[in-house]
Length: 138
Image 1 (cartoon, rainbow, N blue to C red):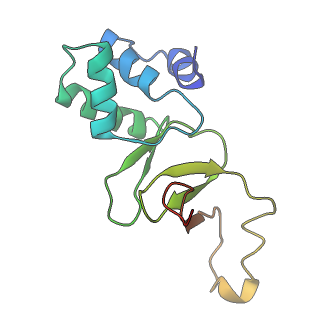
Image 2 (tube, helix red, strand yellow):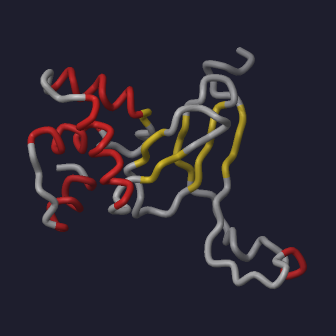
């Protein structure tokens, strides 16, 4: 059983066949599907699932904090089930592929006091950009 399914069961989330299929589609370490990609994969497993059900389920998962909505460069939002494991993202500027990365060091400590403007900084998000092997020079 995936980490996401285990977390949802532990929360007592009502696991209908449709919700289960959406959660199963999102299972995986580097999964960052768009809603339409989730819909296509869910439909292949459960043909009667509706677009509205998929979109509503994704919205619920985001509201619960079990999935992170990732938006990059005006592209379609993507959904990341790796919500409970600290990580950053590596994004291909060509095709939009996203990978989870785990940089070393303390991102909060890297912001000098002189650049905090009196803010109490509680978290940092870093997005690394470049070209994936498929889009980069071969």
